[in-house]
Image (tube, rainbow over all chains, first blue to last red; front, side):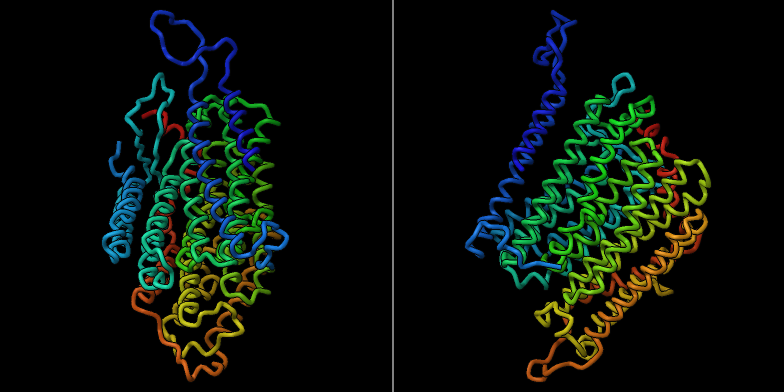
Length: 82
Length: 512
């Protein structure tokens, strides 16, 4: 699942990339430079933090599950059916 | 600029932090403070609902004004649809928090419970008020992450397993949504919903557009538990503590699922006929399959959870009918009626389903079991719970004069007028099966013989629980007033206007 998330982040970074762009810091001396779109970077940063929270939460639950079931095999964790 | 709008998010967020800090020093502080926070939210939400009157209020976070008519910065929008959702969230939230005052005694870590509860409310308010696609995603994650934790609150085998399932599927949904947002940003170079609408109106290429719509629909469909995506819902809703089940089922799946689907497909995408048909089919499927899965359940809360799927199917189906009619440009009156029926049923479902979950919680609180076969004869020992759950059961199965009857009636009338006779017939049949399964619940839980409980008599539940249940059952009756056309025009009129005349939303936003 983490791999899937990171692929999305990379996708975002590619969206923002413009050929020959530089870091989006406006320099009044050279007004017609092409900038890389800064917004996707901000989005990815936020999404990474959210991904971290989700992964941490999932790990915490998995640890508690292991204490109850003594296994990581999801085929054996199947109390809830129907 | 309206100063009230950010309060909907800031107050519960600040409440959550205060609860965590103060809960260390004063044992009773979190209990009452959470209810107080939500009471305040009720007041401002009802105030803004009454003063809104069909307009939309906009708050620009950080005060960034648009440059060359292009909005920059994050917008928060309060219009008719958001106002209704905010009202539901705060009313149900307050009653659930008040109910938990006595219910949550069974668990440890009360301050965590109330802090997570407030975070969930803050996230949902944020989703509903946000006018920006990425902001919807961020607030959605806030509310669902706190709901993962709340589902696992009991830390027993079943709770943990349910939470695990919920998290994996929720993570998948978030991934789909983020991917969809990425694609939309790629094509339109903006994240503001109104601005995206303008970009899509100007033109788009068809395969890309369909792909994005499917991504978004399956992402939010997972959150809303529409039928092919429903696997997590019965586990999560039946394992959570009862006030949380009532929040999840009554509000969360609507605020982060149905609301966003409605908002995006009406106000962001240009309505296309094939998507409208797809949404209607999904809605009908959840309506029919949900009720058939429900009728065989013996676990009380699982039964209620499957009914949530089925009742959400009604909402999605009738909104879908409205979309089909709008996309064909026929019968705008009938389309408006169908959408009104859908939204009305959404409000009703929030009220009676949370009432049912609270009643189930009351039974579990006293008996310690959720198995219908082990109950019986509770109408003598728990008269208040029995009465409120009777009202809720009649309401969900569509018996007049309760609210469920009128909203289902409107949906069925709209379906007939739109010449979807099959859908109308299915809606009636599902309603009858719902009645059957709730008669089963009533029979086994409250009537019939009580088995050898003489040595350990069952008492009525404490006052805060009864209070919440009685208020909700009064609401069940009061909401049937919406059946009168005048009242309905006042309450639901702004919603219909914003959804049927889809351009209003973006023109409101961009011209300020």
